[in-house]
Image 1 (cartoon, rainbow, N blue to C red):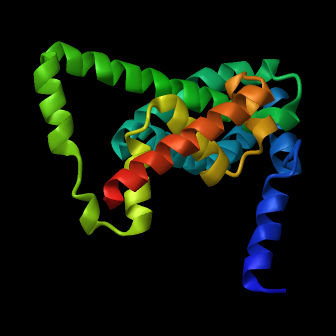
Image 2: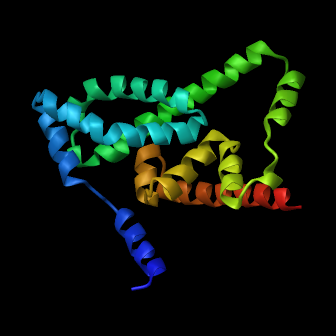
Length: 199
């Protein structure tokens, strides 16, 4: 099988609807039974993934540490009430995504308190990198980072984390049709921004 075909099959496997990790399911059930070692292992497996996800959404690795810590503080007491341990992935990513959104909102409020609107616009313009000097992949990452949070979350969950539309709908508490339309709009926004930098 060609390398591209192999990658396509791998992606389909990752995105199969209702994906459940048997090991994670067993660990969650053990945590619900009060096994501390299971919680440590669950943390070891998922914490790096949550940190990467939070860093992509917030745009800051240092902030991701605080975001994920808050997420775990919310998740751990609630694990006992998770009715279907097989849905841990979507449930946990929803919490990390929501905590990231909270951080972004706080950050915006802090910036607005520190400066007036015109100064904020100047700061934003100064912070835009020289996109012509970046590779295509770097340009895409930079452009995704400045999209509105909702669009950024959708694109990261779909293209980076490998979530299906159904899994994103569950994670973000949206209807699948809404996810599809918002994904389409997010792709259009990203394409428009990318084309503008090519001019």
